[in-house]
Image 1 (tube, one colour):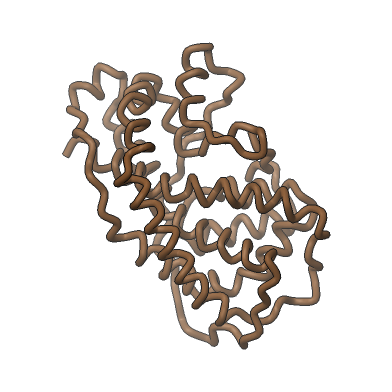
Image 2 (tube, rainbow, N blue to C red):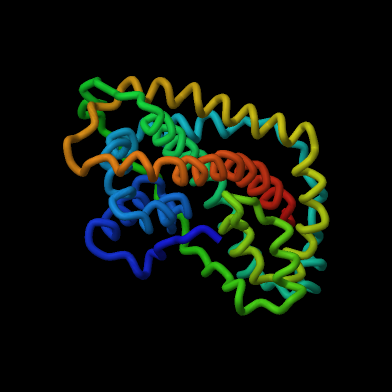
Length: 273
């Protein structure tokens, strides 16, 4: 797994950055993308100083949510409520599953904008505008708190094997998105999803939807980058010899984030009416 600095362990400037990201995106957690950058000295501080103005203005979030809203996605079969009951999900659990899905559908597009901007800055592009002015913008109300990620080391062999089916390779290390690590607290549900979702991963229509979202995000990123102010003098950009590993992590998030939008919507819409 990629190293991450948990929100509970964050302090000082990183804790404040985490708080600001949660507030501006209207979500109850910070993405693993930012949590991973926080483990690399100076990276989150520099990245947020560079792209933060786009999020404080709301321009990044509005663009991300707009282009992700109308992706054409073929639904999966609806899950009958008696099945959820047999699987041990209470009405409160059902609400938690919906909230998990809603949170990832909301935050994943904004993470795509964040990582796309960061990728272009690391490639040498430099904004030089005056910023986004004083446009008034308020983020949406925050979604409810999410359950903790399951601890892989505490799972039994079968549960760990099922969850590993959702892993993506990142520079030789397995990466399991937090989306699945939250849903894994309901073993029967994640086992069902391990049957119905993998065929959709390789389905051409799903791949086309993910590619379409990446293309839309990249287009919006060009507009946002052109409006960003020049990079601040401090904090300094991290050294060049560290860029490759961060770019590897960004490549992973560019693959998994569109999938979180697609599968978050699929699972949310498959829950009982």
